[in-house]
Amino acid sequence: MVRFTLKQCAYFIAVSEHGGISQAARFLNISQPSVAQALDKLETLTGLTLFDRHHARGLDLTTQGRSFLAHVRQLDEHAHRVAREASMLQSGSRGEIRLGCFHTIAQFHLARLIDEFTTREPGIRISPSELSMDLLNEAVGDGVLDMAITYETAPGLDLLEVETLADITPHIILAEDHALAGRDELHLGDLADVPFVMFDGPGSRPYFESILAECGLSPDIAYSSTAIESVRSAVGNGFGFSLLALRPLHNQTYDGRNVVTIPIADDVAGIRIVLARRPGRHQDPAAHRFMQHCRTYFSTIGASSR
Image (cartoon, rainbow, N blue to C red):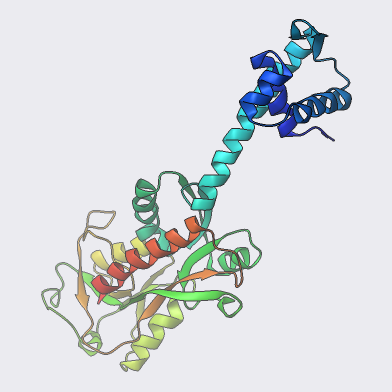
């Protein structure tokens, strides 16, 4: 275990640079005995003879002293860097945030959310993880993640501190050449005879089935997929209509087909995107600012979905 102190090392550097204890004491604005005692203690703790003492000429570094001085300077420089880092961490201008995100939401928003924040806050690193809902909440609860962006339907949220970021209204998607594709809005009853393409992601199927049931629909499921782009492709190829909560910025599917997005005229239940974190966990300034960024970002997303 290292028993000498940074202060003793600083006094040693000052004596070596100024050529004597009295000169170092004047430079440091402390008493000569304080410098002398620190120097003696440093030599005792290290077992080194750092200076040759000359009554007439003062102090000269020994061979051991010169070698040790090089290491002490590195230690002093590192200590100053650590102090600067600590100051930046305290102010929130430096740090790391371990962010989890439900993978469906991540496809639409995670990269842009992080890019907009780190462009403004380059000293803060966001380390993202895309996980399923249950793993996200477990990781937040265990302290593996600092916070997570997920849906309100995620299991285990009752054990976490949760705030709503956006209330998303689902929408209808149809093939561009469908007979109803030109409508400004549609009642789900207008699609009673059209087959349904099911997005069967975690927690999604019960949500969409409940919306259809509320509107008196139990359509034939012509296609089902756990991937949003597969759902959009099936719709674009004429398999039927679908409901989605999140929407891409473009209408073209991966296979080159086109779909249209149409608002639902019925009063249907939305779904909330939430920010979850462990109750009582310390939130440093960097995390606090990122949380505010999430609120601002998703407030515009929620508004645009309605």
